[in-house]
Image 1 (cartoon, protein in one colour):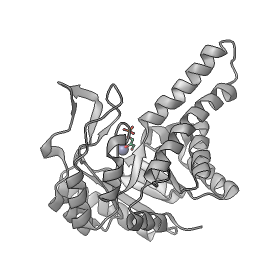
Image 2 (cartoon, rainbow, N blue to C red):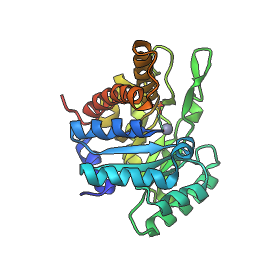
Image 3 (cartoon, rainbow, N blue to C red):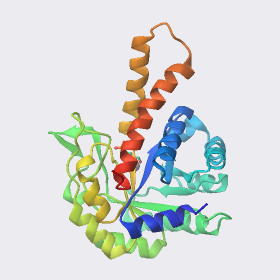
Length: 286
Ligand code: G3H
Ligand code: ZN
């Protein structure tokens, strides 16, 4: 099986993107694995620090490896938005395929210093761990001020020169820029448009595979963003919503049922549908 690094290089060359989907229980992981298996494309599953506490670091590695070898599908595990260098190192030691050191809230100098420490540690590890770094402040839909998500302002977007400096001085493998994207989803399901020009300029200046965070609510911009240099797209909120709606519908129809594997399956199928739709868009499969 090819490495994650090879799949990312292919995505960059072919101007396609790999889907990155978060999970916080086994049904979610199966929804993503079966979705990717049906569509026939590689996939990245991610756990944030919070999701990781619910699952367990070693357990996440064991489950993903087991699915990879039993289903024979290219499924990779990522440590999503890890803010502490120690946590990043724990994930690398445990066998994650990739890690994100999120130093976006730090000064550029401190971000460079800590990102570099993660990169050196990851690249020395036995298996070739990919490191993604972050720059600029990605807004949040949960904090909407006067109709505008908090954090979305010109000064918070990633500057091309800073991105170049961060990538050059850390040797990181991927970059998550702030390009008008927000974590979460606006009420109504449509987020503000992305700054496609900025994506293009950062991709050109850094020659680095770019990662789009906060993908929920950005359907209208995916095609252009992927053609402009986005190689991985993160989706979480839309999956959580689909899972929960699936469970609620099942419970409304079967109010006496208390078997978690039954309502969990309803959540899983509803989530899997979204995974498959997104993967087809990211890989340009009609
Ligand atoms: O890292 C995770 C994501 O960026 C997901 O963002 O919940 O807006 O899809 P989202
Ligand atoms: Zn994110």
